[in-house]
Length: 360
Image (cartoon, rainbow, N blue to C red; front, side, top):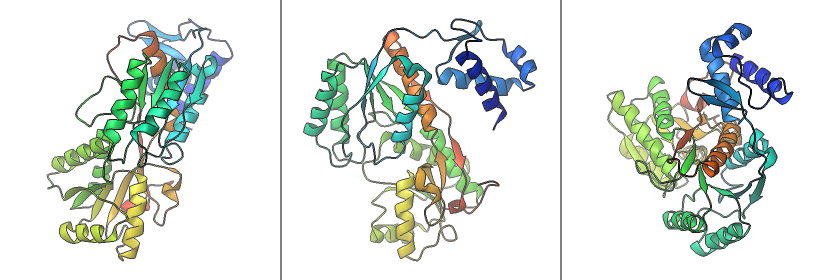
């Protein structure tokens, strides 16, 4: 276990056991450095984890204080269209349930809808049922991969606004980068993640790196494409291509390969990468020998596909805990400016990019 995690667990246990009670200031960072024999950076990271999980408040110039939980009980609604289809949302919701702050609160689940097949009327019906429960706030994962996604997302958020219900968005905004909505968004820095993914292919020796997403990409995927472009520009490389196509369509994929001759592709998510691998296998294009791949999410099957996938790991449990914290803060301080609450990600290196990290 990493050193910062040891410190996090130790301090968390002291808080759970009452050694550090609500409202008490924790020892200073310098004191914790001496106590745990760790660097200030490591101690700071442990304290940030405590804050993300809702155990403490860090006050600039004052110190770190054990959080005094409100006795008021909130009811939170969940509107997750892709629940059961987009794998990151199940562990994010599990992170919400496990979050320290949820002890006094209740989660109400809305009916799940298929993102690509849902209609405005179906989404409106689900939203009306959720509003009828009068939740204190709603967590909403915006629709994606649908021709009508923008209209549906605007309709849902508009209905919640009209009902006076605070909304926190999960994973992505309801508008495309570089635009910004008025809602808090909890996720990773997708633009930086796209840069990191592209840089991995460049470091692996790729000279013609492209980016592929499915039609009607989510704002998170558009931000990843922006990061990809920045990485190529920083390396002095010309963009090979940035295309939205159906990755299961072998004819389209073969035409793209024949036109651009890529030796590396950043895929907008793991599902896209898995479909590309399947199409490549039928086209006799080998991964990673002919084309190297990097993707995003690190879903359950990422290490189990024909060529284990190099991918950006989304810290879903931490995202769930951060979302609960963001919602409570939004309810208690409704006039705060809209925020991007970003939880750090990590690159998991496997065979698909042609290099293997020790221990993976």
